[in-house]
Length: 455
Image (tube, rainbow, N blue to C red):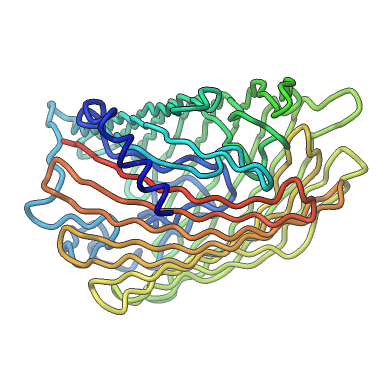
């Protein structure tokens, strides 16, 4: 680690001019099932994922949309007076631009267990958000472009872009149509769960996704029903031996129908049940089918005791039947849980657990059942200084081949907000994958220094 820091110090001056014009850098991307712990989404139109926790117990509140004091908001996104974001008012729109830049070091960029190669990377990310200020209806637009350039291994360079538009049409009191449209150019990180085996470069893919949902509240009962479609188009990547790994077999469409019901028993306790049915029409190959059909259902409780405890716990059943008989059907009990506990106004403790079923890449054909558990904490050292720590454990069970993986990860971030327009953060991440297939086992350290400018 000391050697890594020395390399960064020597390398920063060469990038100092670039960094000044950049925004705080994002850490190296890695398309894992486990994602960094983030603040829970707010109800009910900000998220269209039927399995995302939505505190419908708030339906009994007399003013659920009332502004909260800073100390009652999540530590991670808290904005104290003098540090809050200003934005640009343009008629009925609020525009919020930002730029992020930084330098990071990864001591194992190819996710290899035998031949570790380290490299420095410079990252620039530009974001622009637009939100309507109308009394009725609403539109939220978010676009960003992220470019990552490596010092030694240019084959790892990548540029991601994404545009997402979310809308809400208020039909009448307590009824709305929710919609979401996203187009993106993304990359799967080398060594990630679904990345091709022995890949020496990120795997590019294009995504087009759309969702439309009808939502309505009946006193204590809230219900939603909708459909979603995702289109994927994968590009090719290069293996460590120089050969080309074609990923066209993963192209295709995923169609989903979903519904959810919530009932608020008291202001602190609610019940929910949710169902999601999917059909995955993927191209596959002449000898290997990747399509499947399945569902996942969850039922459970939603709790909120003031600003002390907030969360949701659900259990149910999931089944995914693959067209390929060598994979067969992956079925069994399913679960999802998220909890935030704030023992003090300065500390948020997070817990998340979830199980999903997905597909592996062309070089590791098969289905995967992934169970992930996350535990994290956000601590406000000062009004403008926040320390965040998260630990992740993931267990991946492969179907169609003899393989089981265990993943452990620890992520740490120290963020210092200079003023309303800028911040700086230091990040470290340790990642380790232990697999029954020895070539898939590896570990790595990533460290980064980030600078953010926003308005």
